[in-house]
Image (tube, rainbow, N blue to C red; front, side):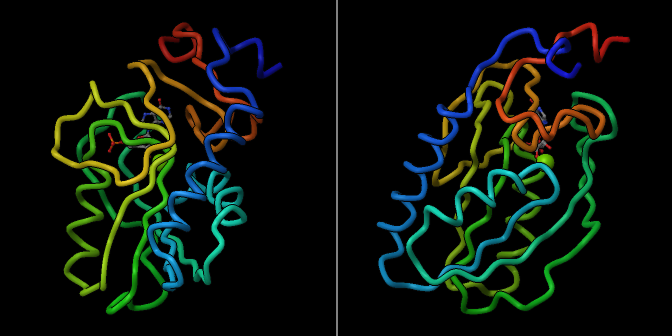
Length: 180
Ligand code: IMP
Ligand code: MG
């Protein structure tokens, strides 16, 4: 059972629902009646994305991008590579990046650099989780669901070696799972 690998539940389904609703309201207020171009980072942010789009009361378009930075470990390699790029140009658009977790910041700082060069009207970041203690690159999110301690968490889209993404809650993985 997947739950046997979880040391502690940090955010229940209900906690996540409250956080996502609050973020949706904040985003709706900022952009007023403007159009939004949501850029979701595959795969981790997908679960969060499908929930938050229904809390944003604005006309939105959506696109997806995949980058690789983590190889089956819990630490960033520092190397970021675009595996799947956006399918349309973003020039003149209000881009909002939807990310699951901001850790070292390497992934988002790389993506911000790439996307800024394409001439969007605006570009902001919405991350569900933020681990500020782990930051090695200067990048800040405009919308943060909640801060989390420096522990490896899984569920609600977040994985360890591609597993646990389908847990409906977010929990701390037992360290013996990734030290095996
Ligand atoms: P960064 O480039 O170090 O900021 O890493 C961001 C990416 O690392 C996220 O999109 C996640 O895929 C992954 N990541 C960072 N911390 C965790 C965690 O605690 N659990 C699962 N994935 C994580
Ligand atoms: Mg990710």
